Image (cartoon, rainbow, N blue to C red; front, side):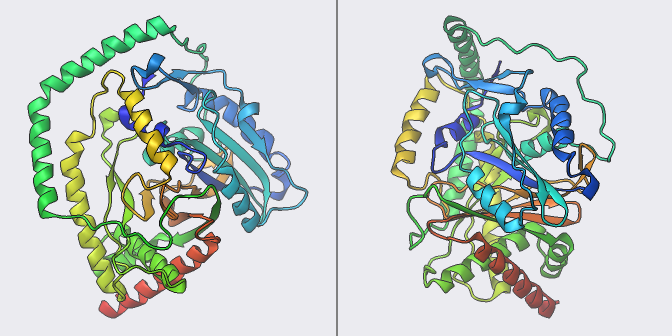
Length: 455
């Protein structure tokens, strides 16, 4: 029995039909023509060996009366047939058709009584490829944790290694309500004691954060034509861009790859809003995140702190916009460092129930739960190729969440020597994610040309 942290429970509370709190990836694989008929069987057999040794082999159950957060229980005997779908077509799916399916798959809520993942296998994709769509509950892991799961499922070479476990333990027993109530009470008492011991340090950290907030005011999230409740419609696109282009621009402008990514995202959003005459006078605010995961935290759960820099969308010149975004992000990173000691809050008795009640009201209203008009995220990925059942992965595109009250999420994941971008829009507000992909390419070109003039 592994208790969820309050931060993990928070993502469960935000879970709704319009905003499923599920993260994942659309992964493409290189498959020789002679092996297309074997891809599904090979991958299913491989996953059957690997999944019991990963974090996917568990189920979530709620504490009685929500006295405590939910908990994960190991479930080694995973019914892979129930959790895996195969989309086998007589001809290859185009990338546009595949992305259309992804936009639908991301809105299919995972069964809360089943292991927290779903897999879709597509053995025929244009260009002689095959695809796997993997989605998990955000409560299980953040972007770092998701990549650790992908790493556990794949290999660093074409020859699959042995499964980490040679014997599979039985499923973990869920305690009876009286047992769980007693164990939760003991755990919460320990949390309360730990909170008392750190009371003074917590107060000092809060005072430092409050002082910083007074001196560094955040830009307010503007309301405009694309604000408002998020629909249950999605549009998805995915693009790969050379990592070296981002690095070269970053070196020219004295910034980081992430600074370049934010500026490119800003340029894309600005172009979109100008095209529909909806650009607000105040700059668009982004919802981003910084990982504060340390080795002692392990790979799972959520160890992220929110960042809300503005995107300087009211600035026309891309170089000026780059430096304005960089300054805003620097202020947010410093704020997050001061906030970090306050992140690991102890659970309190029936705190999970109160959180559910509070979040239910917010989610039902359909408004924004956190600041930000859009989300731009930079999540980790490997710098060397990965293989699934012997098939080389060629791309790993994120399938990001549209948070309540937002209209766009662009998430970037490095893979080898390129950056894979997953672009998700609220299709009721931005019908075609391909429009954003076009704007991203143009914004990168503009910033690249401008940076060459500077250097």
